[in-house]
Image (cartoon, rainbow over all chains, first blue to last red; front, top):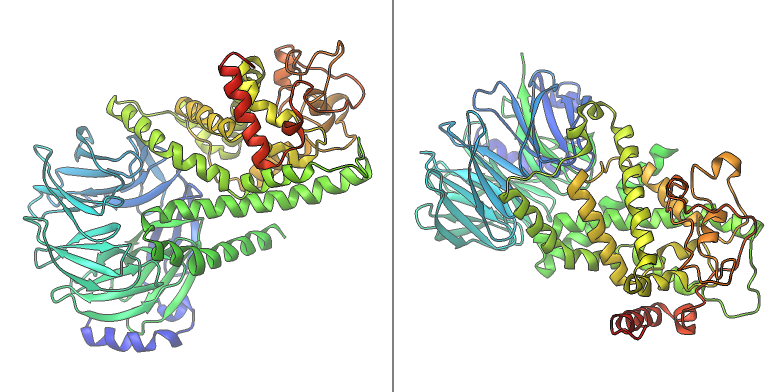
Length: 319
Length: 320
């Protein structure tokens, strides 16, 4: 995706009319976690319709591919379990009892799995191959979202109600540093420049942070309630969901300059991309819908009804 | 029809949250509570809907077949309306949540450190995963059983009765009386529920319609209406007649209801049948607590709260 098209998209966003057909989504299934309905809605991306509801146990929030991409791992926090889904169908292959898995992320070398237990103020480190618990660390209030260093040595977790980011060495479980970020930090990612980016939900900013020291390098303004941020498939952009502003901001991944703002109603939360990078699918936490934005035009081209309080989302390409 | 109501509910919640609550939390620097706030908004809207449905179901019945009429005298029903609104709209439960949430987190974290993961019914009986409605109803039965015993203990222990007498003091019992409870009693109830949830997990939350029916049934059981559920129905669900006997001012020998307690069940009378506390006597007795003070019976929300606390302190001091 060329940066110029994003700028054009920003101006066109208000004019777009909802129509999934216009968007011509690639084939695939979109997995949406209906956290308050305890279900996983499976959407046929091309048709824009929910084709399956897979039951979870109590409250699924986040999901990731297993390192070999053979399974989708769903964290059901209040249900205290992982669901392992067959990606091409959405069927449950197996379940595993674990403690309060809210957010989860594998290390780049597929050796570790970090789990943030939001409601237990704990960070758990599992061995990725057999999911044996290796370390459980007590944390200040609300460990929320996770990132990993490129060398898989350090896991970073935002502490949402402690206004801080913590760096933990995986092997030793040693806390390397805990530094203030902004108000109510939520999403965190590692940028291509090697800096950490943290979305501050109590502000309208994304903090750029030195991963060695935890020091804040600068803050970039995106929109009120900056909640989470995601790299585009080509790595050129970051997209930031702004919960209060009801927008999604496109940032240049290197300069962090704001390239576009898209309208995103319903309290936007998590997002994922169609494999060609042309569409952005995002969950609307209070709207009980998934929104689809055509990145070229910036238009909200579809809104698909799912279950209550949709949170994590994953676009699984097929065909 | 149901879909239209559901759609309207979602649209209302979205409008309130997106345009009022969320900006307010942001402005107040309280975004860390944003997810909890969304849940409380759900609680409050659901509570408002439950109150509305309770009014639609119970008020006509109370007008058509009242047990008692209180024309001319001073009405104390308004106090119970206050109790109901404070409870159902989430204000008092929010207070309990703020107090108990850190306790609940510490408790769950402590169990996790010990390697304990609380079970759910579905993890004990995996076949239940394919039967979510059945699972929900099983939770209803187990939690109702726990509530039966909590209610018996409320009558059994002096200090607990001091609090629970706030509920029994009402002499003008209506469907609004269901929520008339002392704040400390509500906190104990939340702890009781948390204890049970540690053993069997929390019930699934995806059946709001069933939860609504149960809430209305609990309100109806307090209604000022001549209504029993027949020879079979009386064993199935607690009726206004069955529960009025529990609230009777005096029993046969003039002994206060507290001592010869009967009909403790909240939803399912079968517990009283099993444990020998069921009583299906005819008639619709007057309600109230002969041992309570006038302020407890006719006071405002605040007055009854203060009086309940005083009664608790006197009991603990051995002067109750």
